[in-house]
Image (cartoon, rainbow, N blue to C red; front, side, top):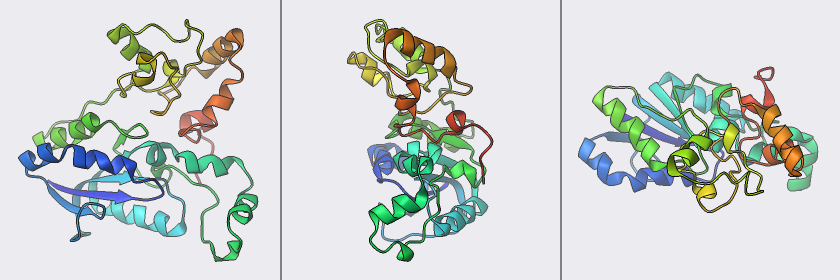
Length: 247
């Protein structure tokens, strides 16, 4: 099975998961054809699956991601940047030229798209690995499943179920703001297990009931829920911004 690993606008952190499962990859005898962070010899040919980290932020990246799609049977996006736009998508809610001129003394030299967008805004995506960073077990689930010729199983239910399964007390009841009811499971409920509220790094579930949680936040005096969502890694996820904006 030929694998490609690609990076766009991101911190490189999610790619570390490949090193963490390296022993399992050796046993499966997969062929990693392209992975700039891990090897000096790379081939950009055809891939059974390509993993993509990072958001699309420049015209060159927009062209490159389309090339990757053409050469890949399957594409999996890994991490909050690739899935939702990442923390760099904060500029999407601001005036782009104000941001550009405040960061760079000579903005005329900078070639950047006005918005930092998820990969799925440009190409069809087969799988999403959520998180900041991703869960290595879910990465192994995708690779081993495709290696065995079956479809990978990834969680789509909310984090609250992980808390229930583990017997973790609801942190909302303990008086702390938590986005767990609208956030996809998969992290193992790390924050609630330490009596901290989920801050949504795995991104929203499909059709999240934001209004209901908004009322809970207001009743508990936690403030505006949108201030929690819009300051997170997944603020530009389509479930939060709606379906109107794609281009």
